[in-house]
Image (cartoon, rainbow over all chains, first blue to last red; front, side, top):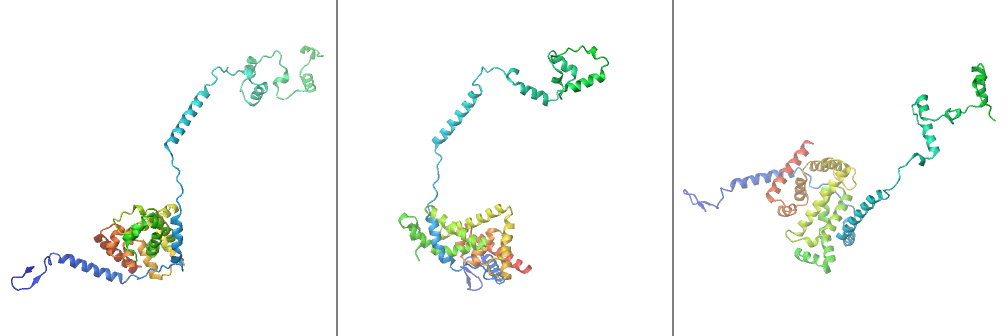
Length: 175
Length: 180
């Protein structure tokens, strides 16, 4: 205990050293109490009638339910999946090179109808001279190169109007 | 009332676990209900979180080491479940945490299980502006009247920090109520 030299009054050990801290604590407590006095003492929440009473059985039944079984992914399954993946790759690889002796596809393999359809649908952008260079006209008929078939009557009318002497055409009579 | 040590022992033995758990639920359901309710505000949500909390307690009781009191451990689980619930909801709705809190408070006006008056609604608005932990300290001290030592165990925070946090919380709430 500290003893004052001038009188015999004493103070507890460490009283003055801790005075500031104790004083601040007291001030804070007073501030808190004053603030609390302005805050509502209840918050207004209510609970449905009978809710808490009926709660225990619900919690117990849900807690005692067994957890769903977890399917473990065993290491040997990984091995089987890996082996299956490798096997699939091998099949794919060998499957591509399965028949190395396959002959190249030629025009003979295409049906004539397919070739005709190609020429009908495709604009070759070729002049008549260019076509004549590649197409044999020995056995070709006029109707083979015209989009619309010409009837004989129409052909004769044309010749009659445009040819002065039909004898010049050197036409052979067809049986 | 059964001593906590005895209750823990019975909870961790298979033969007595079910009966001991029933005692645990009956003892703490109301306290935990209000703790959760003051975080999530809505009764139905509180019901979900409370049940999940007890289920977690039951399934993890073997992992309780006795480093803290049993109810402190349960409070921690309840707090985490509540905050996770809010986080998941805000993420699901694609809004910020603060926006969710604002909406939750707005919804109180139409909530049949909220019978607060104007000042009590303002209090909820004030509380929604506080950081989560500060709000927790306030509600546990002010409404649940828990001791600082018990709050310290539940929130794993020193008593000194809690006192400071509480002081700040009440000043902020007082200011909010004055200004609004």
